[in-house]
Amino acid sequence: MQVNPYLYFDGNCEAALKFYQKVLGAKIEASFPFGEGPPEMPMPPEWKDKIMHAKITIDGEVIMASDAPPGHFQKPQGFSVSLQVEDPTEAGGRFKALADGGSITMPFGQTFFSKGFGMCVDQFGIPWMVNCPQEM
Image (cartoon, rainbow, N blue to C red; front, side, top):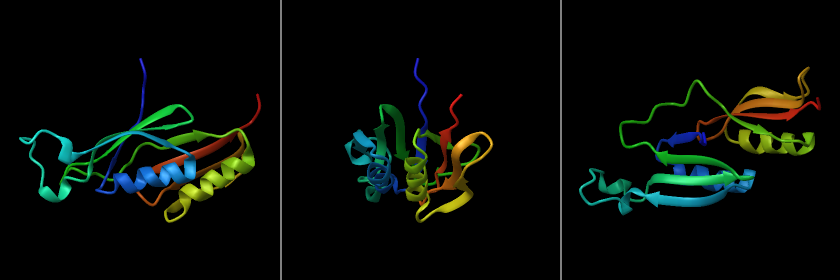
């Protein structure tokens, strides 16, 4: 069994995936636009290039994503995508890159439980936590 987050976007999934490719080193493994779906699938013509399903990997971990169909997008809430990064300098850089154009919920810095931890919402509305764990 495998558990993977599935992220929904408001028509900007492709841009988000390219952003994650740039700032996290994500690999876009698959990307299928709505236009490649069956002809009987009801979808406005302007959505033919939007993403129906995509899969990315970040250091072997899988995240799936798509553009929510028109009228079905809801702002993400109640979760965060969590990155565990061993090096504090690298973790801080990843955090800064993810937060660029978005908002910072908790600035990245040392905590009682971590060599570095921060929370942000990226420019696409996805909440992230970046953690550089303490050695146990």
